[in-house]
Length: 370
Ligand code: GDP
Image 1 (cartoon, rainbow, N blue to C red):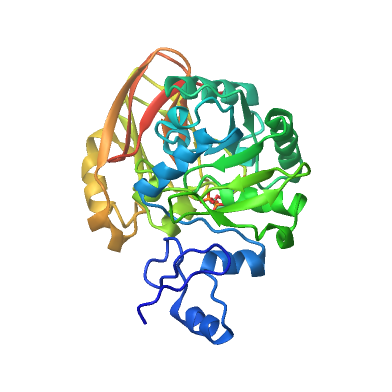
Image 2 (spheres, rainbow, N blue to C red):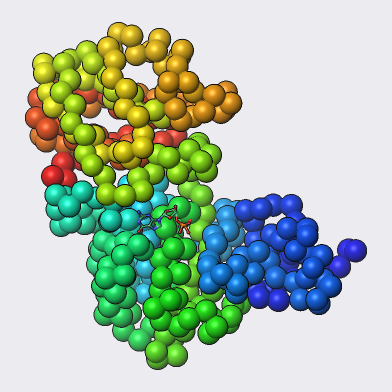
C-alpha cells in the first residue's frame, strides 16, 4: 500500500522502521490501528493512554525549522538544560533564533545536587556560560521535575515572565524535558485537554500544546540529540548507570602527585603536580571509582576497559571513543567538569591535573561551586 497513513493525533506520517523518529509505530500496533480505523503514532498513543510524553529525535534540518519558528512568534522561550551536562545541553545558536523573545534558562535535576551546594553559585555559573554563548537569559532558575514544590516555583516564574504570551519549551534530549512537561500537564490541564496537536509550519514535527488560563498555550517542542552529549557515545543502559539518580554523596580522595582515578571506563582524572591534595568527586554513586598509579594508568585502561573499568561493557569497547586528555593548571579552588558525568573539585589550588573524557565530550574547569 503506497498510500500514506497519518497519525490521527499529530498528523505525522506513520512509519515502522525508525524507532526514534517522528511517526514511529510498531507494526503490530499499526495493524491493530488499521482494523479500528484510527492509527496513532507511538508518541501520541502513549500520551493518550499513559499520560506520558516521549521525545522524538529530529534531523538537524527539521530542528532548524523549529528553531526559526521561535523567533517569529511573540513568546516566552523556556530553555531546559541538565545541570550535570550544561555544555551538552546548550542549543547552538539559540540566541539567534529566539529573536527579541525573552529566554528563561531552567537548570533541571537540582535534586541530585548535594544540599551543601549553593544554588546561587550554580545559577551564576549558568548565566556566565550562557553569556559566553551569546544567550542573555532574562532569568535563570534551578528546578527538579521530580519535586512538586520546585515545579510550582517554575510555573510561577513562567507566569511572571510570560506576560500573557505563549510559552515554548525547548531542550535537547535527556535534559528531562518530557518528565517536566508531564508534571506540568498533571498540575495544569490534564491530558484530556491537550489533543490540540498540530504541526510546526514547514516541518514534519508535531507540537503539543498545553492550554493556559488565558487562552494561550505552553508548547512542547521535540528535542534533538546534541553531538557533545554522553548520550551520543553511551548506550541507554550505561547512560542510566553514569547519570546520578539520587542526591550525590561526594567522595573525597587524597591523592599524591602521580596518582590517577578512573570513573568506570568513561573518564579519568590525573593528579600531575603539586604534592598531596584532596579532591572531591561528585559523580553517580553507582559509578565505580578506581584508583591507580599514573605510570600504570594507560596500561591498566587498555587491559581493563570493558572489564574492571565499566561502562562501556565488553561488547561496546570496540565502538567506544578513545579518551582524550585535557590539562589544567589550577590557580583557585575549582571544579574539573566532565560533561554529563559530574565533576571533581580540586580543594586546594596550586596543582596541575588532567581530565580525560571520550572524544567529543567536553572537560572544562570552573570556579568551585562549593
Ligand atoms: P528528555 O529527553 O529531555 O525528554 O528527558 P526525559 O524526561 O526522558 O528524562 C531523561 C532522564 O532524566 C530520565 O531518566 C529521567 O528520569 C531523568 N530526569 C528527568 N528529570 C529529572 C529530575 O528533575 N531529577 C532527576 N534526578 N532525574 C530526572
